[in-house]
Length: 294
Length: 280
Image 1 (cartoon, each protein chain N blue to C red):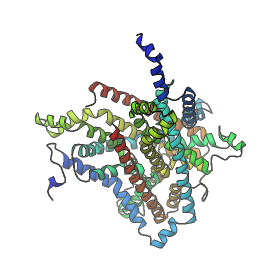
Image 2: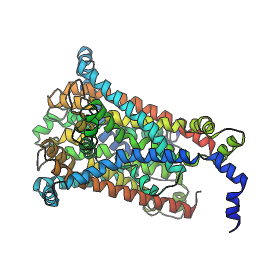
Image 3: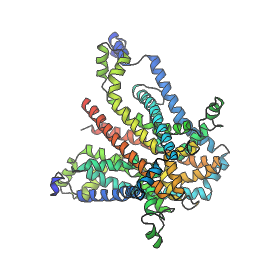
Image 4: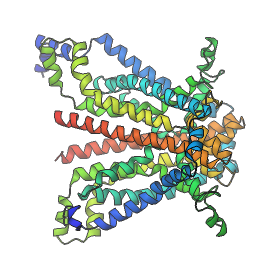
């Protein structure tokens, strides 16, 4: 108890602290710069969304988010995410099993290709789908003959969303599964479990938090995607309008309060996403502390 | 070629199924559409292709897209380092909340960010009115585009530098100090070189993201051809005029640049990991 203040007041300790940290005024200055920058670029936009949403009163807010067009947009956004995210979960699990548990040639190339959708502009994603499924695309005539609508319809929106959120789950799983190695799975197999049992009872439980983390990130991106969906949707009100597209239409019609009201729902989703993300990071750190790094 | 020559043998099952499904899904969802894009731009002759991708309007859009992205990434490089430094090294009230908030641009839909930033920087907006009193036009100008791209790229530098900074051993700094270096020298000669690979990786990631950004920029830019029109928007315009080949040509130029950036980022990350790994 008494050694602690002594250590701090010891001249050598004080000199060491002084040598490896900055003077108080530098610390204060840097902290203020960082906080001011974040306040300007993060807190202010977030605040504006909510303050503008309620600028014309709670009644208009409620009317804006409960009108049929808004409700339809919310429904379509939920549907697109509900299809895209599970598809990418299955892909993520398959890809990370192959990449993390096996050593094969072309593995690095596969990892790079999985990252590709992150580097591609959303508009190019929409454009590429258009060039396949659009009226003048490669499959356009065939789709027309068989009366299948993909562009300017829900399937196009879902495809664009899948492309955009493609890497999120796989990127979280691959490094973790690589780190975990294969001893546990090998042990399970030796003890008589079959492949699927090993996967569901050994591998899946050990990556569940990373999986959830990926799902949350993918979901946030899926519900908020604008560029790619805006190319393929055609923006037909109450038919192919997702929430971000609905916001654009309202905004361009100068219905600012309504646009911000719908935006506030997506901003709320973003805040919930960040909260869950922090909780999962906390949980993962605690898990690591309990089991210890091996 | 036997199977074992490219696959190291192991007792684990499911390699064929998982790799087969993963590559099939990757090809179907990602590679096929991108191949269609390149294929479509090949329907143009070289002269036609060149006319589209080197038109005055296209070149003006490249200048804006790459110029604004570069400035935005540079701003994020400086402030991202400061934010990461403050979050790792100092303690203050609300640090955890602020740390979590740094990821907001990843989670907030770009359209929402776009209209919020426009409301702030428009001539009658919160900050825009003060700027326009000084004669500075923020929204509907290249400055507005840059502001949106700063928002979009904000987390990248912070999130690449933060873990490296956390893992740096305090002993190195103590050694530098005991050898007579002052704090600034220690930072410039010891810390900064150690952080450089991660800083550059963060810069490249922010730049790559900004180059392709569409949602937040269309609201704040005003979209005037030759002045505030970014390349993704020009592609959109071509598409709306049913000029598929023109859109594909511009799209393949951007796709090519994205490939180069992705490759560069991979190299930087490799360098960063090597450095980082060698120290640990």
